[in-house]
Length: 272
Image 1 (spheres, rainbow, N blue to C red):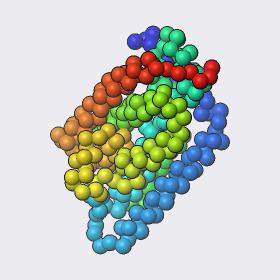
Image 2: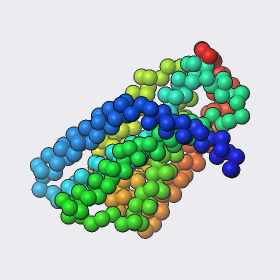
Image 3: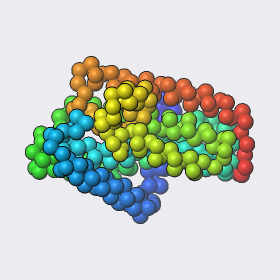
């Protein structure tokens, strides 16, 4: 285990250094995504202001404010796209080089994603999180999130991260058949922002639709950790959603291994 860590930690640290080297591009990403979060905030405030209901979809107005910004913090940490790295490696012929190296290609990608996730957590995730907690207490009059909920949220985020990158690895395997997947990436990002609850909380959908979402991995990516943070799960339901996340990690890992074995049999190198 220690030997494997020594092999893959440099992938994470190098990605972290790369993010630090291109701060301008990253801060532009922060501005654009945070701008989107504020648009959602004002949109939901307008929706709550036009109704007499104290809550919508099981969320009060104050809880929706927390939901919107915690979705931003969570998605910036866990929604790391590695499929475009796979596509780039296929086009440049780097996959063939990786196959002859004594490393696991998928593990190297996940390690790189970890480096990016750590950076996104530190800049700006943790600062927005702290600011949100202060705003909750000072302005909204809500109580501070309990240590238990924070720890459970972080555990859920770790599994969410693994679900996201393992799913994206499986999606990236399409590049072995189509080579160029930019259009598919755009479609995937748009669809996942809807299915993961980033645009609309999944509790707003009819019960039957919610049950369908429960059988898909997408609800476990962003919606589940944010709802845990809000304290919407308790008792057996809490253990169930955490267990569901763990099951999806195992399923996607096995599925990725099967697909990887199949696609490497038909590897076509266009460059390198």
